[in-house]
Image 1 (cartoon, one colour):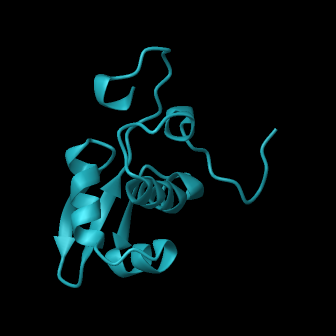
Image 2: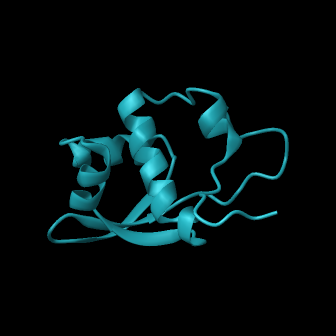
Length: 101
């Protein structure tokens, strides 16, 4: 059964700290909301939109640290602070990659 108004989030993001600080996790969940929440793997997101959703000012360093952790990929930077965010494909096996355990 599907519910309208809900976002599919991988269980490991909700069940474990997954190596993230609380601010990183909030940012990551917002990225998932703007991508998977609309049924897409990639989407152009402005840092200002994430700042408004999270209340976190240092969005550039926050997103770069999450990209370094391979939580998502950043590509096609545009002046004004937007990137295309690409979330990893869903993991269907029980064993997660090391950076996602």
